[in-house]
Image (cartoon, rainbow, N blue to C red; front, side):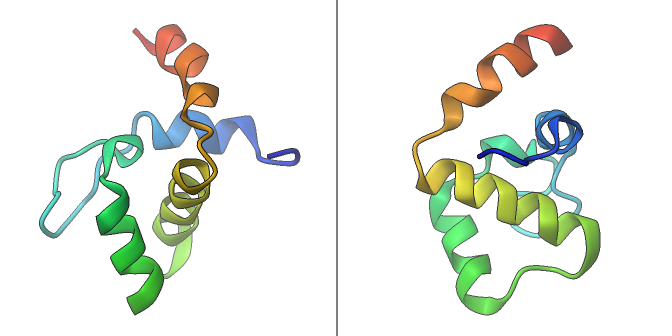
Length: 75
């Protein structure tokens, strides 16, 4: 995940899904099935789509451990 902006990783641990079935859920906590659905249907435009794509890639590649220190620093 080299080149992933640490600011984006921080955002996905804070920003909540603004609409839909998982409205109010922190992006990093969205289920893989929901992210796969977006991946098939097309990610939303703009920043949210980029954030969701990042979460999807992290989950797909088993890299959730990357977020542990970030989440700890946000508490």
